[in-house]
Length: 165
Image (cartoon, rainbow, N blue to C red; front, side):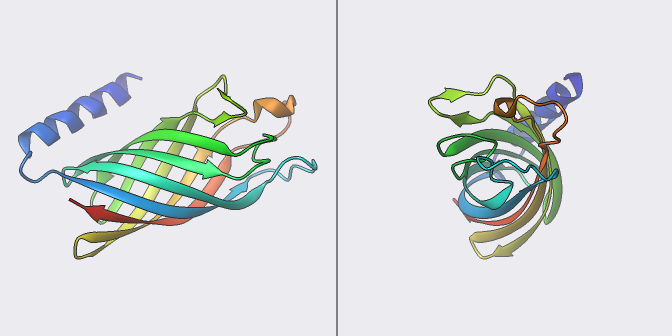
């Protein structure tokens, strides 16, 4: 936790010192997801496409990104669409890596535990647009399944197109 607070402080200082270089980006994207374990239950989707929307404050070397990822019905045993708001702290520019945390919202409520994620990506600038290709490892538990022997950690691979302002 202390490491995350230290990184967040450094990021905020970086934004304030380089305010003229900082910019905001808005984007949309899609990711293919797959759960690591083979979960053989009828009401659980273990792979598919998730959609995302993002808002990013970028200062060059550091970036703060907020996202909402939308998983289909039956992801993790949910009976409705699953929304996953998340916040990420990213380091790098063209090649980058970062850490983040988020929560799942479905069936009218948030799950009890947060999930954590690691991200690595490659960004291709196209004028004011940026094509962001990334891979994520999400550390999560599917509370609804009520079993301890299933590894519900998820890997996603996807792309996001962002516009810089």
